[in-house]
Length: 292
Image (cartoon, rainbow, N blue to C red; front, side, top):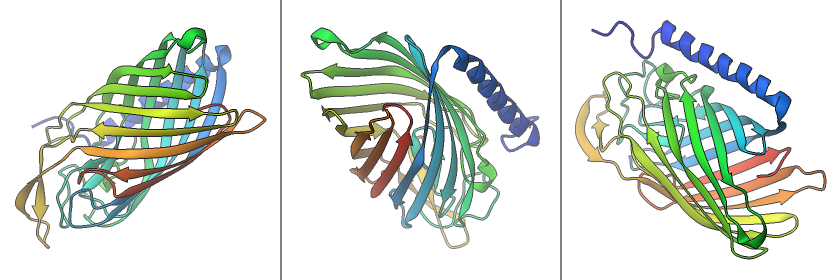
């Protein structure tokens, strides 16, 4: 028997301590970097391949420390899940854990199917610039590393309760003064909650951007692999009665960024799910003191 489960107070204290350490390190980094702040809201709606519609909401607050060779971003969100149990939130967005019915994963202790809200996970992301876009159509290329600290309450169904991290590459190629292509690939190493073996996987996206003096339009398609190949379907009493395969979460996104004269930006976006494992529709609104 393990000495400590993902839901113990000791593990929760460690996560909070790690979050405090990350914030302290970021405070030290701020002395040698310019700082941007972002806040806004993201909403997902859909059944995610189950028999029930779910609404998930996130209200993230971000701090970015910008240096010539890197950008460090800390993101902490307040989140709400309309029906817990079958879907939760992780670093790459919604995660499918059940195929339908009032069931819940082993790490959730609250009643399945109820709404829950509270603090989300802390995501620390560092972009290390290999090259910056410039004259002669030079591309922007960066290594990307991130770490998710489990500060969300997995007992309420708001997260997975485990650390995970990702490593990848981000690319943007200007083809003209107003047209760009872009792509990103990031391999995610998932922490395994007690009683569940999550899959690691490669998240990939590709898209285009149209850039004007004050506005940028972006269109992209992103594919996020499932953390479980198969998930249970539950009866009315919450007992597993069947198994269903999980598809990847693939969606298309269109967003508009508007830059103000003072340097801040406002971003509006909408997503549309392409596969059964994706949301039917999603909405984004973000305000930033810097660029995006």
